[in-house]
Amino acid sequence: MEGLPRRSPLAGRLRRGNSFWKLPIIEYYHREVVLQLVGVTPACILDEEAILPGETEVAAGVRLLERFHKRMPRFLDVVTLDAFYLQAPFAQKVLALGYILEIILKQENRDLYQDAEGLFKITKSEKVTLGVNGAAEVWDVKGVSSWSQLGRPVRVVRELKEYRKRERVAKNWVERQVIEDWRWAVIAPNGQQPPTDLIRRWGHARWDEETRGFGELTKHWHLDHCYHHHPTAMLVCRLILYLAFFLTAIFFERNLKPALRAGKTHLHLAHLLADDLIRNGLESFWAQPP
Image (cartoon, rainbow, N blue to C red; front, side, top):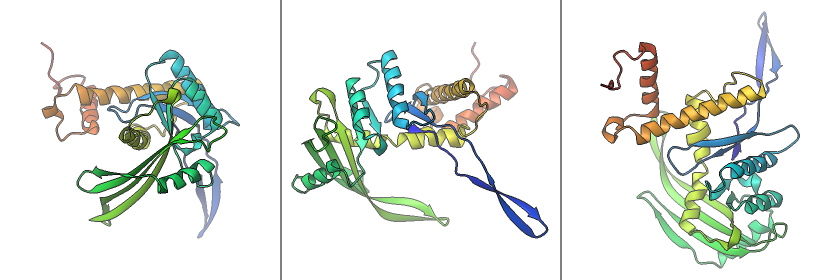
């Protein structure tokens, strides 16, 4: 879960003769916590909750999960989150709902981080092949009891990942070696122990929110534009946008035949749908019903 992206303050310029004065521009933004399916296609946004004045996203996240669990108690099994959510009151409330929690572990000054780091040094690692361009070394330590406020042991998984990345720099394709060091705290109710490889995949799937969620919605679906500033209207506009995004993606992935969608993107489909609206269905790309 993550808040909606916010813009940095801008500066305006007022010209007089050959001189400029910088004038500050005050911007207002709205903060939300969003619940999204990750690691699956389509990456569906399920619900959202506004962050109220004076509170953090953790409080809004609890309300969101409690409301969603009340309506659909068996829909989710695992919740993946960023490091800010590694707080005992939040974890205890979510565990009470029956969800497995996987949270990025970053703060090096935490007892949990330091104890897990010491255990990694005496724990045998496992080698994992990542296709033809990379490999990873994985440690899995169970029963770490350093987080006294939580009142239950925590499992910590570390992945030291090394791979070659090809990217475009100054109009040229270059390859470079990348090393990433990941740590996840896993807290499961009823002593559940998911496989280590599954935990790795859950942890990396969290970034679907940035790429296939906010990234695509902001770049191609105008999520960064607020059409109305009444709280109810804003919520309705976003929910309609999420629904349109989900229906378009699921139509593309699960309705179109592989041969028809080969080499095409969601944007291509969107342009075809827009053409149909303009032509009022005449000379449509899609086959007409008999």
